[in-house]
Length: 146
Image (cartoon, rainbow, N blue to C red; front, side, top):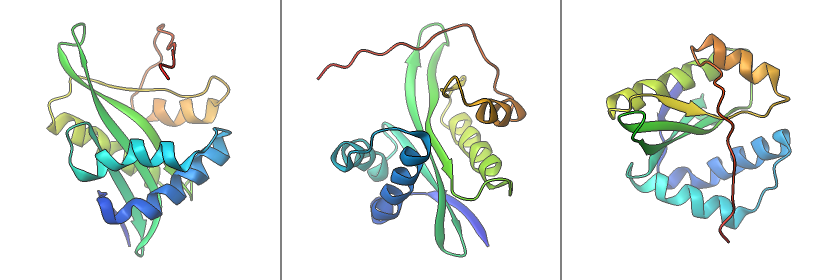
């Protein structure tokens, strides 16, 4: 039986394994200390966001990280799907996970939800389009502060 629930501190080890699998699949560098530092506060309370965990017969098979942001243009609170990953794709579980994240964002009062995907990942964009996300003209830029 597939279940989606809010993850807590006891789920950290399983989540770090899923995050590692996602980073390997997507070609991102994985550093357990960095991941743990970013993940841990989200497992304690929802001040910064939340992590949803999908289990299938008790086995962790996917997760979604939803964080909060603030925008004048957006009229206040916004959500950001920071990461979403499913081990087994094509069974509808990823769509259910994403829709649960959208419900949670709405429940928290978010006016809209953003996400980012790699330019070369057309399959991900098709998935997000099926779930009513639209591409916009903005380009995300980054500056590391360390």
